[in-house]
Length: 289
Ligand SMILES: [Zn+2]
Image (cartoon, helix red, strand yellow):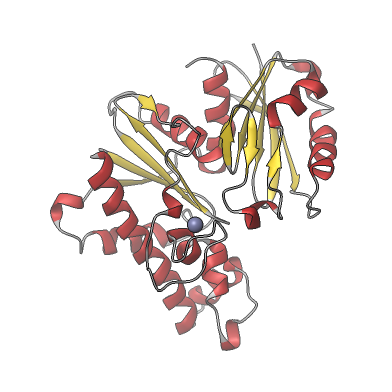
């Protein structure tokens, strides 16, 4: 049985065929359409999956946002170009005629990373730091999705009550400070208007403001990890995402976490499946594993 796996993110759409043994074939991706309409997303997905769908027996989708009853609802509409609502499962069932499962991307990635830990640990959390900050929690060997799909959205917990407005409607969320967009939004002067990728390059070149912006993100993430440890008593926290996996970032997070009381210390790992964790986790869930 081969799964057509789809990852819908804030900046890119990725599709691939995933075999039963989790081998990824024919991975392809393109930018998430800038247009804010469901039609644009549907059309982009149709083009991406068309060459692959005949080789698959089922579809598994990992998507940003809250996935409730097969529908995508944006928690932070900024992450999907303003798209608020999209009938994910219905759309892919119509396009492919195949059984389709949809799950939040960070929850899917948590499940893949839980598998990568080899079944030795039954309580873990996954946090991705990229366009936004997402998360997934595995508790006693079970992936938590929650009654309405909201479980694990740790990026929208409070980091600073006097912090910046978050796209979800709250003020001072971890996402508004630690995410790639949060890092870029706080840049001033010579870095004003730069994206997170550029700010990381400038930090490597020794730019003081760039270093401080990244440090602020890493410190905020470390405090979040202490909160997650207090909430879930997890044995591991796995970090993914383009910011989370950027050179030197995890080391900074570890250093900040070490300054918290020992009760809140937890082992930190970089995501084993790197940028494919969402695709693979959705495929694993579709396989019933
Ligand atoms: Zn928020």
